[in-house]
Length: 132
Image 1 (cartoon, helix red, strand yellow):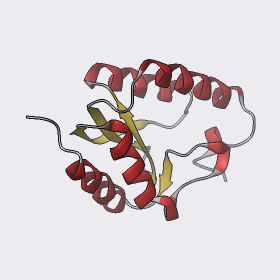
Image 2: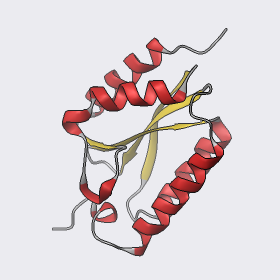
Image 3: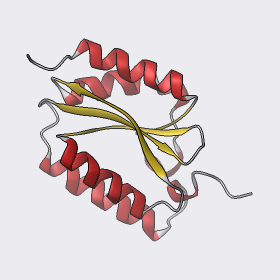
């Protein structure tokens, strides 16, 4: 059976490409700034990515970049505006550490039900609400 995380394992060139895209993306984004924390689901599985993006435009581009390295459909499930992307993301990742996927060296993929993932991300977003 094919693993839903095949794209995260081994040394497949899509993993290298995705890692390169991520490093280029984060060089352009100051994570201690306001922005979005988001949840992306892989197909209809219980695999979710929790990450950050500066705005809706960069989030759409991020989804396209991730999709190019994944043969399964990725769907944006939820996004929240936050005052500090880094702190919100760190908080959500810390809450979800017990369901974090470690294959492929990534830190932003989690295996759990959507409600668990969304509860953690929503709680983090409430701690860092956007400025009025």
